[in-house]
Length: 73
Image (cartoon, rainbow, N blue to C red; front, side, top):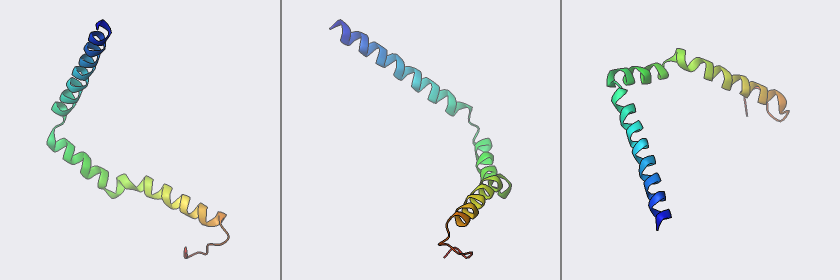
């Protein structure tokens, strides 16, 4: 019985901490700032490093596989 109470108390404390952290995080998010971050993430300048890495991997993969030709077919 005592063990169940201790486990229940620990679970409640952890849940309260998680809810408090989630609430605090949401309160700090300005909707305009969040929107601007999303737009920046979609911009070509923001995507360029990822696109370049994918293209390099694709070119490396084509060079390593003799069955593929230059047009990828």
